[in-house]
Length: 325
View 1 (cartoon, rainbow, N blue to C red):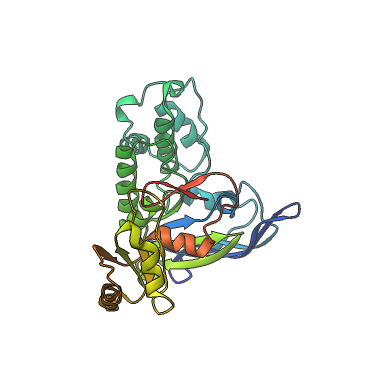
View 2 (spheres, helix red, strand yellow):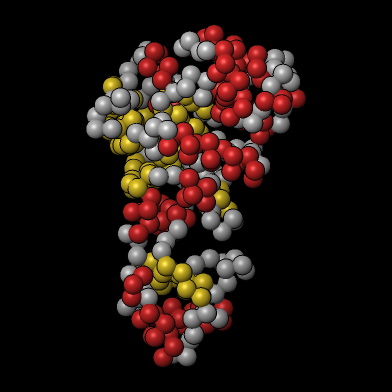
């Protein structure tokens, strides 16, 4: 049981400072049990600091953390037996095999049945390489072994920081299916990631942070539906004219600068009233050649965070191109 009305993880007014910089500035999160929760934010927004606080690697300067319905305090090691975590790059003994590494981990934590090691190796797709030394593993294989290690104690709550790091496309799909299956079985999966497209197809609930504060949280489908945006396509040389024609009545902006999406605009309007856009543009001899209703996660993210980086790096958006993060 998670307690607290089915909330598996919560933070209340979480604060963490590094000198004069506020890494976390009153962060409030509420993660329901039995979902995949996507944790998003620009670099420097406080995602990794949050993950480190949640796993006890660092201690907050203020605020509270609740894990599986109970307060999580300094030294509460046994609570973490019900939590699996992959934070930053996983570390293993390079001269041991994957199987031996997992045996060492199992001996240092909660009791784990011997068969569980084979189960998590299979879940991570490493059965065929289980007896190979980890020093010969690729980055993606080490990441998969890190996920296997996080699953070792069959945790109720799984905390994953950039779990797709180093995985090839097939590995990402396999990981997504595994995490969704875990959530469907009643476990809670908390994923911090910069892969917006992957989070959009995997997460049930998202939380978006900026400057150490929560700026939006809720079921992903509801958040996207509330945005009220329609995407339309016109001739590329008519984009500026279309924006001017729609004016204040239908605020519009160029969707991207990429050649692939040339001519696309986003327009703020109830999707049910999108016909009015076509009529207004047609009256100005500007004709719509494509229309899509709804908002994607990339657009929501950029709107809420201002589309600005708080550090170096990039988000991989739904168009496949880098987005400042």
